[in-house]
Length: 309
Image (tube, rainbow, N blue to C red):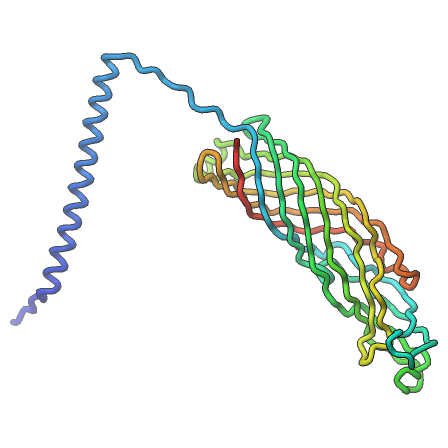
């Protein structure tokens, strides 16, 4: 019976692996023995002289955080509400002069007109209790406006394109950008360490709840309307749906603080926000009923850094 011997390459690799394992075990043994000797020497030293225990450094009370994130509409409110309008002809097409075109506008939520909104946040806080901090913050929010089909417009005479009888055509809207500036105050309640230890949470992670309320200044929100035809027989200039407004804003969120060092952390938050209705604008008196809402319910997510001092 023939027995296949291992190749010289396999033997050399086995010797190398065994050598590495032996070196690792030897190193661990030496480290363990050194630790035991240190402990023994420390025990002997403590018998000879008194040990003065130093108090741990005081925990920082203040913090500053900077973060960026986004807001996503929850489809619970309407930015554009059901309305009607009467549009004049496109001034760029003289042949349409003298005609008026009634239109029907359907509601659209904020997600279809502006979503998502990006924001930048800054907070300054003070720890009043081991698990409770109060803070004040500022947020800047921006969202690009979209173009959407929002209803239909009617050529009642049918003469615009030479088609007898009333004809309906798609109506579109182009929305201006959304910009807001808010100041708010609130609290952050960190889960006690006893609870975190019970669920075996890592020492470096501190979950917390956040709540805030404040005021938000909204720049005017505008829109223009045009028919989905070539050439467009309706093509308005931008008009104000909602004017410059102060609204009430509030947020509730759940967050995580990941400690990098004693004074530096990474923070991640996810929650919900609500803004009350802004003031309705006057769209050149051509549009009625389309700007009766404008409040927002949205989810938030943000990521940033925190420094304690």
